[in-house]
Image (cartoon, rainbow, N blue to C red; front, side, top):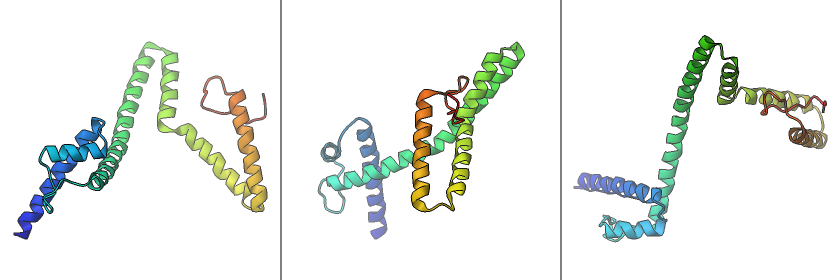
Length: 172
């Protein structure tokens, strides 16, 4: 008998979470979902009572975590597809000698793959190593000054061909 009860409990949990997920996507709040579950006859098999709002909130946390996990796994697939499409655009542009399309595709690939970000991270690592021997207060002050300088430059001048790269060379 306990095996059947567990299977039944699991079935009710899956059914409840599916319903909670659907109602969340339709904009319902936890309190409203709890009431709707009771109306649909989906009740707690242990108590025979409607599910508590606390149970619905726990379900929502589980569901939202599943959605995030699914989104993150989907992102890499989408990136791979977009990269393949960009490469096909470049191949077609090379055949027709449309250099502007080629350059635009390359820039989009750089952004998609985060190559500019890797360069920035390299600078940050080098800076961290440079400041390693400094007293903490001085290193923190230098970091703050540099961050302000970069923010100021970002607002004043960007390299014309790539607005995502900040010029910190000192030239205005």
